[in-house]
Image (cartoon, rainbow, N blue to C red; front, top):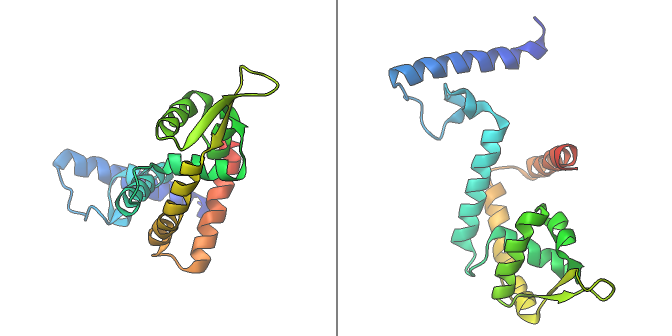
Length: 177
């Protein structure tokens, strides 16, 4: 057995322990101590990503004083640098598909933070632009959002933060295109 097999072996052992613990009702490990968890899913990257997303959204909701979601913030920030643009392009900029971006745009338009207008060349295409109210909200919340990011990453050293960002970018480039 070479070193490449060790992580798989450890995962299988944790899975067996997790199955035994689940069968006996033994959950003696601390809920926050995932390294000691006998449950195989606690050692899966997808689980970490989902949990980190929950933490990030909760921090955002607690620290940002305006009724705005992380996705709405991303849309406003994208439009600040690229407007007007069509909804499909906006969705691509923030990682939302064309079916889901419509609801985000609807909610931002209802708040009067963006406006939709027909395209000049193709009147069927809707172009989305940031309004002055949207730009004001964006300026107002950007510092709070930056503080949320700093708080989320606080347990990491500056070098670890850069490495984390690079690794996230690499995974997204490989899987999201």
